[in-house]
Image (cartoon, rainbow, N blue to C red; front, side):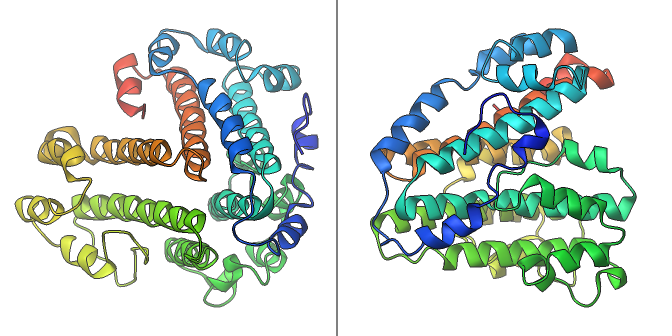
Length: 370
């Protein structure tokens, strides 16, 4: 489905038939998939990611220079396609979003057999992200234009449908379009009567990850690797939630942690929320990621929880890469690339927004995850 030089409207057509295609491919035996071909294509794409030292150069550039730099790299076609309609940070944000969508759709289209199905399921996390973005925007009165800047239509829901949700007169109208999906399932009554959308976000995330794990039974080596990757990702998501809640000394009367983690259980996480720092560090010492975050946790009062959370995100990237090297002809290099491409776009947009907002180079550098 990859199309070169399209406008952002035309990009919305990418993936229109994806859901139907997935249903067909899901009938293919579980062991099927063109792993050598796709991992080779992904290795080539990974080599084109921005190396860490490039970010130091970008931090010294003004916004027009950043846009020009991107126009000479992997973002060239998107910068050219959108350059007549947008400028400055708007151009950078729209072009990087379009590039991300195009790249993920290319990867999906490279895949065959069950590999195609499970990569598609993983990419459906962008549906989750997009629907949450739209709900937040409608709740706080953001414009459709503001919403579109943050949409990445790389899942099963095409851009046209996401725009329908964003322009729906009310949240009830939007959720009627989402009937029979996990988003409607997570509601407890009509959308117009929801008082706490954070609770809905927690529920829909739980449903997404639960169904994702259920859709990948541990029946083959490929599936077992995929499940372990997802379970470790759940640990990372839960660890970030734990650290945010612990630092804020917040209390909740609902389930805020995801089930199905590789090392951490919901019960253990709920207990750790109430510990002091010494006790928390003692409990976390039992987990494989502890050595990577121990120093930042020790300094959390001075550096803030944000720095600690960024270290957790770096641990996620490092771990994904480690597993992709251990299993080079599996789905893991593909998932590793998906994570790193997403992080590259986040870093580029962060630098551009930071420059526009007048943040110092040192502040922006601290916010990057490289």
